[in-house]
Image (cartoon, rainbow, N blue to C red; front, side):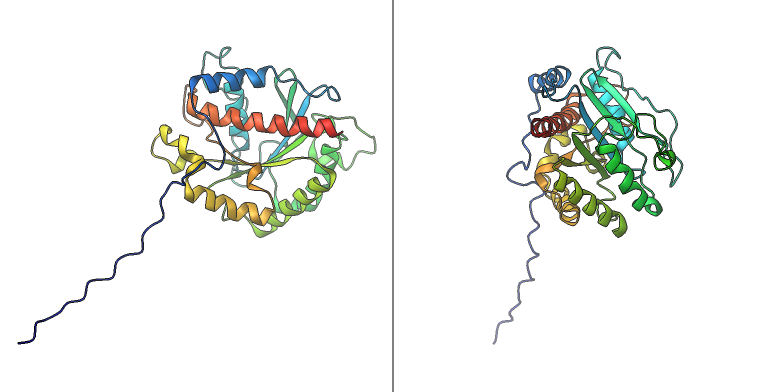
Amino acid sequence: MGGSSSKEPPRPEPKPEPLLPNLWREVEFSDDAYMKLQEEIKNHKPHPKASTTNILIMGNVGSGKSSFLNSVLSELRREEFNSRVQSFETTRPSAGTSVTQQLRCHKFIDKIKIFDTAGYELGKIVKASIILKMIIDGEVAEGSKFDDILKTKIKMEGDQIHCVVLVISIHNADKLDPALIRFYEQFIGMLTEIGVPCQLLVTFTDKLVEKTEDLKDLYRRRDIKQKIENVAEKMRISMNNVLVVSNYFEEMKINQIKGTLLLEAVAQMLTAGKSFQERM
């Protein structure tokens, strides 16, 4: 009698490990490292060629730009606010619009200025690129309304920008409008030509973890790295210039893990800005 034989079912393809063996950016999560970052930023001194380090932060509506500024404000003034999360903007934008309609300057620390631009509407990209170049060159005064910048015939005096930060949400990273991607690519190319450092800030990563403790592995998450690599390649920006954060949103109190990621991002921006100042 012939014995019946049965084939083994095909084995499923092994899934890649969710965590990379190594961090793609080294970040230390400890009380000492957190306090060291606090002190480093609060005691920041620009290069002697500049009186302040000026950072321009920009992003499309819903990118998390304003939430990042609120979060940094809360961290740098934690003692003043008794470690409570603060907000300097109480009005939230409606769909497709931006609260910020003028060049605003946030001076959280004496020697650091963070300039905030309006969220980009695709219909105004050409106009935006002209305005941004003027801002970077220090030809736009703080408080200037964006609609008025190209109308004025008077040369304004502003602050030269030492580092530019583009903000995107991790959720929209693979859904960005192709026209916006092309704009960012051309804009980054222009920055490269004039030597101004540019960094990509990725927000809303807290939605990808179950608990705050898991944020320590953001720079080891394979899925996050792959998603960011895809958009960074399209924008032609190096992964060395990518920063990942989790903004405060519904929290009442600041915490060390989120704070470390936020402060590490600011420290990297200041380092890039100071390096540019040395070459001015």
